[in-house]
Image 1 (cartoon, rainbow, N blue to C red):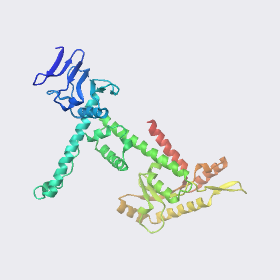
Image 2 (cartoon, rainbow, N blue to C red; image 1 turned 90 degrees about the vertical axis):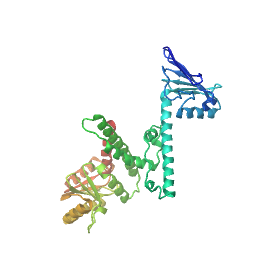
Image 3 (cartoon, one colour; image 1 turned 90 degrees about the horizontal axis):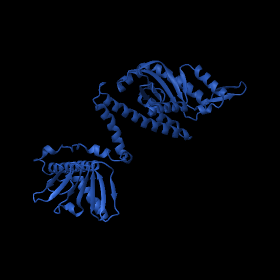
Image 4 (tube, rainbow, N blue to C red; image 1 turned 120 degrees about the vertical axis):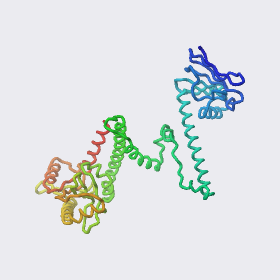
Length: 396
């Protein structure tokens, strides 16, 4: 059969398609409301009538397609000469007397699906709005509806995320909820070592999340380093928030506010994966590291650094002195197992840019290595380590 055609109950032609040339025409009937703006539809690349039409009565396009043509016609005040193709790109020519619209069937399918999802969601919302009214107004008859919640309409998320530029348009509330949902979704993926595709989804998502997060931390770190007047407290807040990222060998960070014991404690304590405790003291990036003894041509610790070193030594003494109470306190309040065995001390202060000569660099290294159980970490060294990790992730 070279051609197929369909007629309505009155014998009027609805559509005719030549199966060899894969060309045909669909005629919108005069009694249809669509006839005001769409009289016929040219079909290119089809050997049968594709989805998206009223097949039996010739009333035109269904759902989203019908609404799309109506809006386009309404905008320009002209009827549409529509060509529906099996392939190609959408095109609209508004110059002729009749609008010439070329629409690929894939786009028609997509707009139909989106409108169908929106209508379904709208109907659900209306229904549940009515249920809420019934439960409130006629409590005894509809008490069973009082705790009913609006269910999710399948396909809604796919429709939303399919829109171009959607991620750039998210509000702060949208972003917060999205970030909360991603880990929950990843945990729910049923992946095994055999299901490589599912695991790959998890790995790619995790890497993408790390890159975004690391990039933000690096930018914030650089911005803060440029601000000369940033207080020590602000640096303590920033490093407390990101220290496990900056010092990835640790498993848990404990700000001093989490230690409810008498005595002075450091800015925060860090636990390694084995539960051993280290002490961190935070100074500012512009803290002077060294001073020159001109008579001996040697450098020594500046006053602020000398104070910080003494402070860390005192902290280590306090932590060991109260070790039993500290271990018990953290076990009861944080459910953490901790070992206090010769805790190491770290002072985060200064930048490598302060070491302006080879002699200064050598003396800094000698004095740092001569201290017992105390290390000095420079701010730009922290940043460099973070940037190297980000570059590694970016390269895949």
